[in-house]
Amino acid sequence: MAFNWPVFKTRAQTALIFVVVMAAGLLTSHWLFLLLFAVIHWGCWIEYQSLMGRIHPDYLEIGPFHKYGVILAGLGMMLYATADFWKIGDISVSAFGFWIVLIMAFVLPVTELLFSRTINLKNIWISIKGLLYISLSIALMVHLRSGEIWRLADKENLFFNISQSSAQYTGFLIPLIIIASIWINDTMAYIVGSLIGKTPLSKISPKKTWEGTIGGIILSVAILSLAGYLGGASWVHYLAIALISSVVGTFGDLFESKLKRMAGVKDSGSFMPGHGGFLDRFDSLLFAVPFVWLYAVAFM
Image (cartoon, rainbow, N blue to C red; front, top):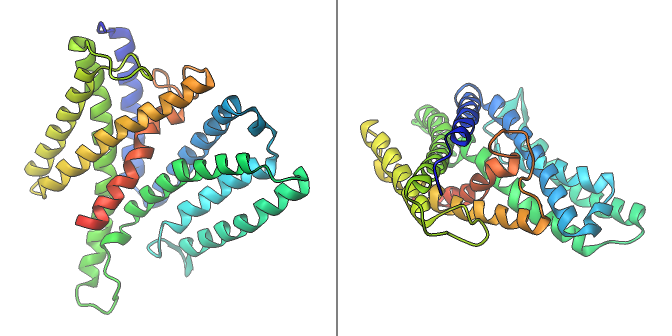
């Protein structure tokens, strides 16, 4: 695959804007982060439903209560994942999210039966898979950002304030490493694949090569590990998160490519020039986040 400078320039410019927006959401305010990922959640769901409608025509028949209700349920999962770390006054955002999920779990089947006169289990299963694919992943990203994993439960503990500060710090750090490693992997895989790539990675995505894929993973892990080492942090965690994000993210990219092939479309959307739609941009992240979350819970 020959290196295409105009394509790379467009991708690089779009990716730079993406990094700036994501960094702003991560580093400025947890509320801005939540708003940013609520938009991403919405965009991914709209494109997912469009793809599923092309693959399974029956899914086009779902009513508005089903279509938007399941997105609202996913938003409830996101809010619930904030834990008790984020509050509006004395009101827990997490509790609000819990009630949204609970209400939607009751309302959606009822409205499906009342308005459709029947319950199409296939359509329900497609929506459940969407909740697992999109909403759960983004909810876990929000949970990582909340810092709840690293916060001491006992507020009377002498070190609670220190733990609280640490939670806020690591809360934005882990998502930042995930996003950075995926971005570096994607960019480097394109460059390496364009320059020396000869062996196709998969029939699903024929433009990707083994050389580009391996090169992107190695460079992503090396850069993030070096950043952790120079920053005086535990570089092993940087290495592990970058490796998980890059490898699992590659499978996420292939999975979304498979969906597009089944739907007969080139891109899931067109909101980002050179990158396609929301799912095209966040397919790697949706796969990587659950595995990074498990790593963080188990080893950090």
